[in-house]
Length: 289
Length: 309
Image 1 (cartoon, rainbow over the protein chains, first blue to last red):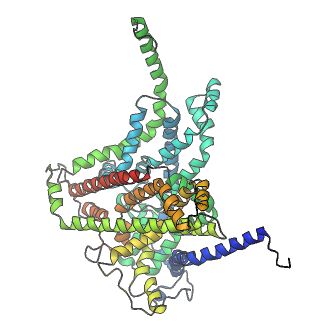
Image 2 (cartoon, chains in turn orange, green):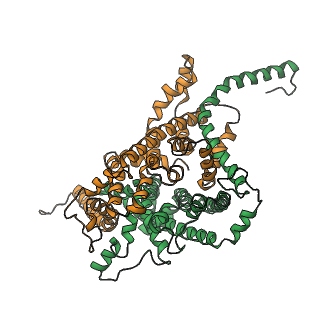
Image 3 (cartoon, each protein chain N blue to C red):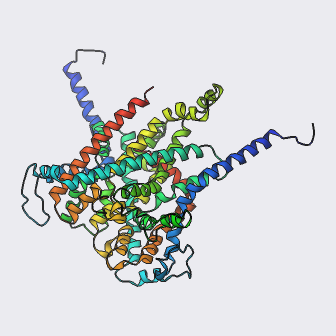
């Protein structure tokens, strides 16, 4: 019985701190591996073209420069502002379409009855099994015949066909108690009003999740835009980045400046809404299960 | 219905009811109609159209396409480049999926219980996943560069080792692309595993503790078996995603050296959009799809059997 009385809470706290230290010891190398390449990209975006090839690597730009950004913004062959706007329009409108159509269909498959419902739903599940490689060429030829290549439509409407959002919305519409709809029906509300005013607000969380998931997918996608967009002015940022890298634009600094412009909005967005985004990614990502 | 003999008036009544119900249900189709329209145009129709195009010597500028039966498929069987790209892709996929699952399991086990900064690490480890694959490519080129690459920087300055030609070596190029892809995607698998682990009832762990099980035993006999459904989901989705790998070799290596890192999807892309042989490219896509469907089904049955206890 002397001065070294250790209270249980204190001991627990001590163990918590010790465990934290141990974990950081484990994970610090991995954290560095994740962070260093991104920091490198940011650093190189502000490094003079002449210093890009320096070895050992100059981690902190000396002197820091905006010349890479100036060169991109000035070059008429690299309309990066236009690409940025294209990406924004493609992603926001495309996402809105996906969320709206998925919620409509998901609602019908969860709460409404109609002949052939089971068959139609199994058709959606079947389509999940088909890799996009098969649909690429016919979808491309169709859009070409419709003269929709190099337009926003070439991205919006194939995106509208995606099915994962329907599974997510359906799951969440299932959880709404039927009494709510019954009450609204007794009051004489139309089907669409019940969906729009009663049920939709109750699955807001799932809609946010789908919005995040779909937006990131459309903003970052390279393969489909590369196929259907070829005119300089029509490109989205990920395709534009390839143009910066190719041909006469073999300027390393420009590629990093472009990568910086393409990633900063999502990285900042991610840093601010990380909790919501991670929850959304898990919710929406698991919907296909 | 309690009565087995239906009077004519009764059948008429039920029929009447049936029509009435149908008429009431008919407007419900309006809800699925918008999506179903685009689904039919851009997913269902292309599946069958793709099968059809693969039977033609389809060239984009021609008006009348020549029907050639299974000739594309016969040529495909003889096509050495196709088989090489296919085996490249399979190798890349197996490497990536295994590394992703192992790393994600390891990290998820560590981050499952909160500690100081555990949430920060979770956010950090997912962060590469929100970058575009184009950005991944631009970074990847410089990570693996022989002369000025980040990796060779650490090897030469910190370990005193020689510069390694990661992407110039046919044996090393696919593992390098796989590691790049793991860097980009393991965060998602990690998030899914953490969610799956939180669904495992805590009393099981307490019981194991009372029975004197160590952490490794607990992981092997409780976490791993109960995580099997999550594992199935992760493995299948990753398999489907990585079998279609395109941008990493396209941007970082251009398929080289030689064809050492050319992926099947890259070959498909080049056949169609560089050489405009759409019929042949379609047959590539059909074979690719068949392989993926078969493997997915096998994965499902294998792992389903292991989940049933």
